Length: 451
Image 1 (tube, rainbow, N blue to C red):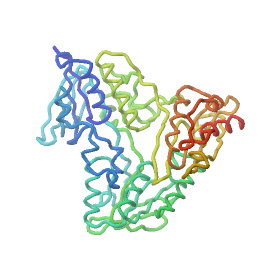
Image 2: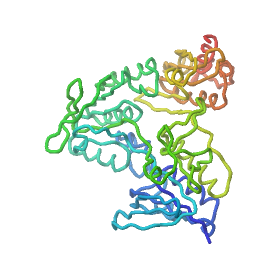
Image 3: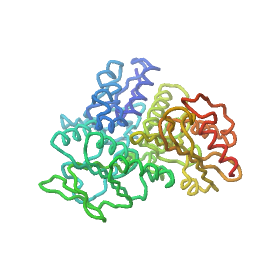
Image 4: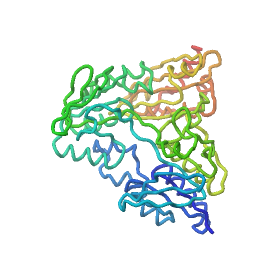
């Protein structure tokens, strides 16, 4: 008789696990049932700001695999089904069919929790008004499109992190007047040091965005149930459309209610095989804590790259394989118009908070040979441990080709390299792509001599 794998959540982690387990086992060996509360599976939420901005034209292009495609591959996907309870003693889940308004139970041999994360939504007065939303799903993107079609011309984006920055660019591209309200004193303030974030603020304002820093939202003005303004301590900002991008929190309520361990960082506790502390229950994606390779601490880093990898690790191990997830560095990249922004490891502020005696060294360079047409500047900041020279993190803000250089630093961090070792690496060179001394090598060399 086939074992049964039940999966809660039909997006990145859950369906990566399902697909990997299906590749390794036949339907006669392992039955796979995946429950998803929405109507869609396996879509790229990271592409939603670019859909809103018109850079991506078709919503369906963000869908990697539909429920029908998963079913054709031998995975029993049940959409519009919400798992409301886990009984670890009976090895069963209680599932609510949202369309039929009926509940049932299903036993499992193995259970994977891939419940993801939800956007932070403070209890501000008026936050439920028409026109105030987050951009987390394709349905959210469709709602933005309806508001634009109905004549929305003034947008306020609350939060200047990754999503806020990308959404602001998209709405600006669509011709809206855009205000970005951020309570910190810099955009990207949670992921960049202030000296690196200054260039982002400059680019936003140069593009025509009304960037309001150190400004706290207090609520929303509404008329007839519709938003008309965002209220702040500095006064109101008129709006027909408000998008909130304040980060996310792991969806752990289901696991916690079942007695499954949740860590201090707020995510489900798992080992490097993606096992929880409860037998036969696994977890992956934005709902779990991961091992940070620099600090050694457990952290929650909600990125699709991690979710897909963790899902594949879990699926492999559930199917009888033996693989581990190597941890995270928090490597990420985004852009605002022509400006590329990237980071990996620790910022100078994070390094100090983690107890490192750290130094931050900033270098300015060009993305290609100075004599080659359209050479553009970039700024690289390296964070290293004083005395040992150990690389702790890096940040990059600059023009074309700047951002993906962060992957060199991420590779070096993964392998515990010192800045001196990074400065001696054999990197490619040709005038259209780099000066003879690549900016990575220049920055590492300057850092090594400063320690």
